[in-house]
Image 1 (cartoon, rainbow, N blue to C red):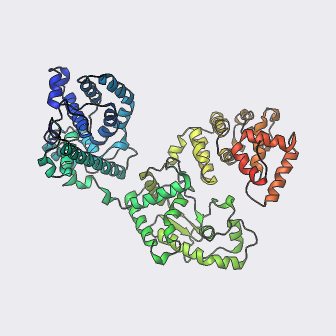
Image 2 (cartoon, rainbow, N blue to C red):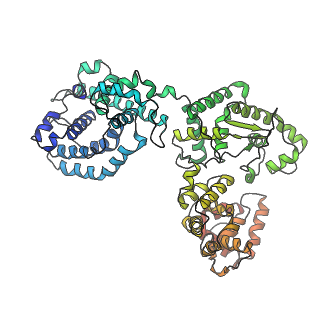
Image 3 (tube, one colour):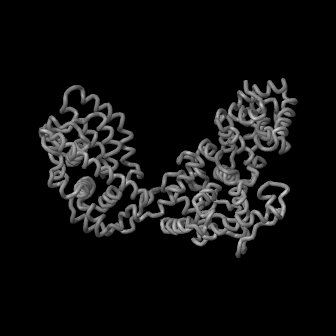
Length: 598
């Protein structure tokens, strides 16, 4: 029991101060008092008065960090913990009651969210909740032992993975062990007048035993023994998740691409459910084999290839195109993410595509048979890597095309999500707001972005309201985005031929995409009032039609000069308007041309 592990917490003194009131008789309050005083003392609260002093910093930490990590609180009993803190603060002078009350009030929402957040669950807290739902007496170790076997195969909360619970449990175990060790050392160096928090006898049994005793008291009696003994399979530890090494590698890839795990990758078009942990282990085995010398020079690129395929929306890619990029050949940026058709029934050794197909894949005119011969060796080596991955059944290769199978897509998504990368499902992206959708899709390759945008509109019946909401997100909502050109480019991915005309006409006045809407209406042969289109929108369409960084510098300058010649007021007026409408994009396009913004 925790009372025999954490001594001199001042619990009896605190309950005596309540003078037998209703709170002191409430079992939930008494349990909360035992936990709160124990954790405050463990975290180093001053116990000079006999009771731990609830400093505001410790109170905040207890509510939003420690309780969600270590303690199972039955439904309806959360309010007991702030009540204990308030009553404890009243035992001290110097305005502590008011300061603690302020912290409790400020932290109330965070406390409730943290206690209810499935992401904060540990194996102990989760199984305690399941046992209680079964009617188990959580204070009775024998009852816990009798009933826990019935939880074999119990489902996890929605959106929670076994690896999530494992990771949170491992972290909580480490934090609790460190807190216990520090408390023991602290009392040994400066023995408190009230007596030590941990006895030599308790610590002699090992910090792990002490932590287990506390967790038993704070979740369910005897639960730690069951989860490390007869039912250890219910609570797998880090050794049971070797594939997290691959998950870390994919996280590194995502950070290289985006720098933030919260930036979403596009959802796959097709996903097939399997056993994601087993499939991830198989994929890890292939990746580790590919790191061996016989698969040089591209074997070590396996995690990058897996991530690159996923972030394309799992559309198939070209072996030859990837090999050309690895060999520093020039590949047209507009073609880098173009999907490759997967031919059915194509098997056998890899053959480099013929020259006309290479020209189409790379966007490089003038390629010869000699060029194809030079690419053959690297392409075959890369194909060998794809074939080893394909042996798992999670990757496919058919001729020059390679990609993730539907089950492979599910496996890579699992590996991304287990490390906190935003990897939504198609259903999740469909449920996003227009602004959330545009924020994400502007970072995606065109093919998956177009697919998800179309699905979003289709899910709303392609209504005028949905179109108007999406067009506003493409325009006014992102008027001053640093990557505004990427947002505006999404307009070109929409099937505006099927758009309700009223939604397009309503966008004419948009200062960002008004000219885009005008052009779409004219292509459809419909009447549109060009006078409604703001000057800024006209300028942005000019900017977006310039060749940017593609092509010879003199051709790019000639394109700008031609556009400026048709602009009212000439180049100075156009540059001024662009600097106002999109300074980031204008500087990126015009700077290399030697044109400075005002």
